[in-house]
Image (cartoon, rainbow, N blue to C red; front, top):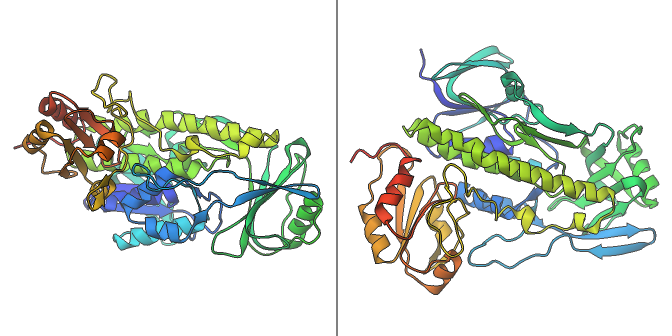
Length: 495
């Protein structure tokens, strides 16, 4: 019998591909299959939040994402003959703790392409045209049946992750409920097309009665606009360039507008749903398979990517010998985050129907920098804290002489940051297992910028998880308390 894979991933969208990249750079054996015949061709989810940009920095794709994206354009809200300028979000300057402060606009097909290129650099490849038909699992493996042009293929892996979208076959096979609602009468046509009669320096919005609206967002580094047209309950969605042009002109009153070279078209129904669980045995859900959102606020894709980023290092650690209970923390940490994000995106979407201007604004809530796992199984409430940070919070960036802290964090390792002589001595003495993610140790001089950004008032030892969150803070009892935290996330230290 062939040795089983470490992880089989179903679904090669942003969440599934992010997970595959993270696992491959940990040296794991991974396959990623997708039932589609080729990569996604539409612009659908087009906003990349600052926290996701930090994830992309760590995974080695940030440069390509920045090159293929732009800052968000200003809005032009058309009210009859008047166009009102509106700023959806205020661009911010880089700070020491937030190096990528602004949401970036990039069509999803380009995000997918960048991630797939990185996957191939690491030796992986998406297997298109291969559909997961079913699976069984026992105490040590999952055996999946995958259908392709060459017939059924049985793949055995230690773990299976379903990142196969809102209609997830993995979730359905597990029998997990997908709690929430679908608004079947509330439909939106989304289409990518070359558009004449519009300036490309604005995201154009035409409000309408009863919550109907049309919007056209210019896609960076292309001559395309993404059109969003909210349909009436009994309206047949227009199909084809002429029909879509007529529908746009009827809503906007602007007969100069025309679309051509239609690249992609979809009819979207707002789904607001959350899986009742993210795991059954050796099978996990991530991304839209676990939660689906309205399009408002650019939250769904970003939340899915961070699901994968949370799960990847934990799978790697358990496969290397860490306590399998570490995998329980995936659902405990990520499900509450998704529930909160669902509430945010739903509120924004409902506001559009009421012509509430605040629904067009984007701010700190959407950027996902302040999301925390504090109080979860890896971040107990009684832990030490600094003046500004608790265990479970995002570890901020900080300027160091000639570098940044994020340069130190980048990679599939843990980082131990010592500030002060007592913390540095404990860092030197701390043992670390040979298996699993390695440890990088750094002693940081108590400079004002670092102390201020991390809220440090005295000797402090910080353990940063591979996903950039604080796994432990010690302001006293440095060695014993850090050893206890390490045991929950690593294989046993044997020396």
